Length: 327
Image (spheres, rainbow, N blue to C red):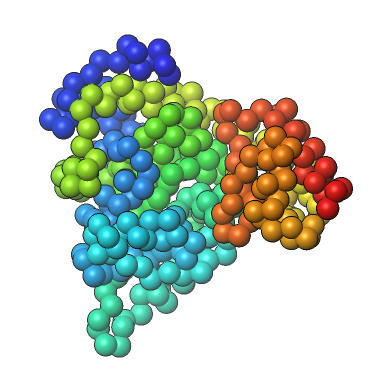
């Protein structure tokens, strides 16, 4: 990636003449089957750009209650665009068409208006759960029946694709617009991309500048994203296998901490309360053992990626066992 970045041909993306960015956008549009794409600095920027285009100020977005656009981005949406949400509690992050239909029941006073239905695939807080293609199709039918666009936060859509065997273009075909990250499972240092109809992307480009997302010689980092597209998807099964091994090892050490069968992709959540420890306390003890974790949704969160080896997984499992034995 660093070699590609050093050798990248660049221009000025504000004027749409950075050739490396343009090639990346064209390639992703073709990959997803969408008319156009727009390179952004972050996944949140891609999501917030899409929301700004789709949703009127003061109107609502239907999304699963623990979706990233709600839990992490709600302040951004409210501050930047005056957007609010109609949250639905799903099963490990997954919505059903029936839940969406129920949420679309008219407000008796006619004051609450929904402009968009959003889904997340894989669902991070749900534990990296995959939204089945058939469920996505059913949700699309409900949204279309209500005259609403369907948007997908597909930050880890390649993980979903590898785990399910469903092509990224097949998922993309069921939504009006979507984004995915180069900087997560695919392994690039930075960047995400928004895909959709040409007129949507044209407006999104204008909005991206409003959100301070205009940049100049972005081809330097787009070159790394191109490498990520080439090399990233083909090795994601390794991350999934490592995550499963990690989950099984933790379950062996602390049986009530998690259910290994619920680990579908590269995300592992564990509950340390059976050890009499809070997540923060567990994180501190694991840090003392040389293992770093994050705290999300009241649990310990661990992710496998290209920089996590099988040996690293063994080290993490051993740390859990030592902490468990000492607790």
